[in-house]
Image (tube, rainbow, N blue to C red; front, side):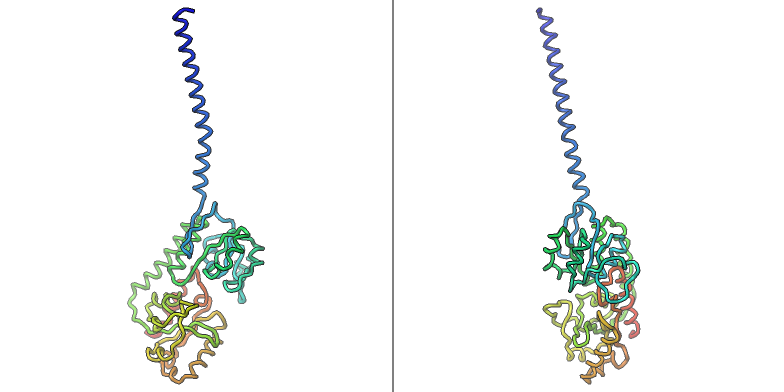
Amino acid sequence: MNKVSLLLLSALLLFVLAACGAEKDKAEATEETPKVDEEKVEDATAIEVKDATGDTVVFEETPESIAVLNSGDLDILLALGANVTGRPTSSGLVAKEVEGITEIGNPHQPNFEKIAEVHPSVLAASLSFKQHAQNIERQGTKVVYTKANSIADIQETIQLFGQLFQKESEAETINQSITEKVDGVGKAETNSVKTLLVYGAPGTYLAALPNSLSGDLLEKAGGENIASDFPQEESYPQYASLSVEKIIERNPEVVMLITHGDPEAVKEAFEGEMEKNAAWKNLDAVKNGNVVVLPSHLFGTNPGTKVTDALDVMIENLAVVK
């Protein structure tokens, strides 16, 4: 074989080797590409939300269903169009839109059998439910916690559910309307009305503090909470024991009663308590007939998106005194 032939053969071998290398690189690139894409898709579908505990809860995808233990969360989720499979047990009239949803108890008495029966992807509950969380999570249901001690808390819950169910735009619209309502009240010229907020049932009464939802609503409506510096109850930090001496000293212009139960029965029982102490009769609120019972569906529980209705009621009751 002559020199020219050897050179041609060497060139041909180099060409073949280069082609094989290119094909190998191309194949490897093709094999690796889907793995990178799959990771990106996985990250894109994961949903992270921060609940009322401050913890971040991660979901691989949008939850298929949710169950709730309080009416406010139920109201928010229905407004966002979520698939609610479990709702709080009610002893009163039930709206037609929720009649077909299974009752699963309430924050104080959750019905674990019913929760397991509806087997939701998520359970929304108050912070007090934490002691039961492990039982629920073992069944494959994740728990997210909510709170409603202020208008801001309710707006955070709306945002949380909006993120969880990919309804951010709808949640933002609801929150914007609430913010506009609160800002509108803030711009109005209001004189502080000395107010006592009383929460309870016959025989048990507590003063609602500013860090409670009703206390926050009172402040936003332009009222003055005469119990703002009363010592907090250890078990119920949003409330304080009634101090008759301080109440008489500060002489509220209006007394607002908050209850879960029969409003008229609570009012009658509270008036009976006041009659036991003649000094109550000298309060401006009592003398002028300004002892009112607030609607239980707006104040006795978390009102959800209807928190603006609660604010309107608060403003109306203060306006009577101004």
